[in-house]
Length: 345
Image 1 (cartoon, rainbow, N blue to C red):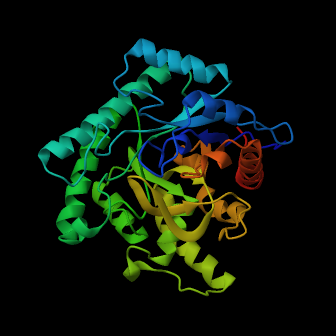
Image 2: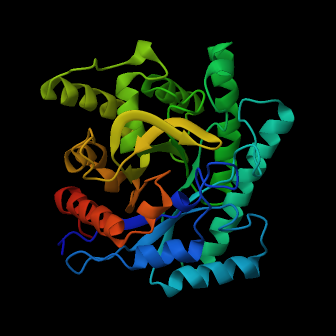
């Protein structure tokens, strides 16, 4: 068992939801209770998961639930010995929110979703099940085609929305983290993400959530070839030089971190399409040395207020998610990340 006490090790609940549904070809969602059971069942060398990160939407949680219902959910989570860390605000069309670069009504919905996330965070904080973590958002504008019609104006619009969202978060004592993922307009390359962070310019309240799988595709310039830092067939030396270049730009803004694996492809299901394909840590097609790459992001992490890290494995098949071996493999690599790059109180 690691001598490092931090960062705490969390599992995400949203792999039971993202890409799942009732449309043809989709698998059904996995309930919150079942995701908690699976997480609690993982154990590697006496290490277990410390907590969960949590998506604030149905069927796991009604974001409009009253305080008493939310406290029951907090009791359920705490009953497994877990803390809640970062929360995912329901900012997308079809949830509470809408596009951050849309019209006034859409942007109002986006801000309403952030308020809902902050309200739920407050209930969890008061309950005691949540003591750290951020609230995760993105631009909620799927794809880059509309953004490309006027990149400067659209980035400004997203930044204006994010700035208003950050003010709401600050009023609630929360921080917002924008997850770098190639499917979200204005956040679809490392350079566009950096431009957006600098345009918002509220580093105490608004930062970046780095995911190992998604940021790998930043290197390849999948949705922004002009920002590619690598070419196919690169050497290991060239890879890590490019990786360091990217992380050095984004790490100062990074306030939340996802451990993940990627095979260099894009993947999607349902409304969540064409994004980084998450793989199991030991997937033979995985491109990342997870422990080594995590070290670039976790350098000086404590100084940026990071107290936990979370596994992200969206859009795995339900059979994979239901397998105990899956969660032991994930917990094992997360423990190795903490052994190599963690810290003590």
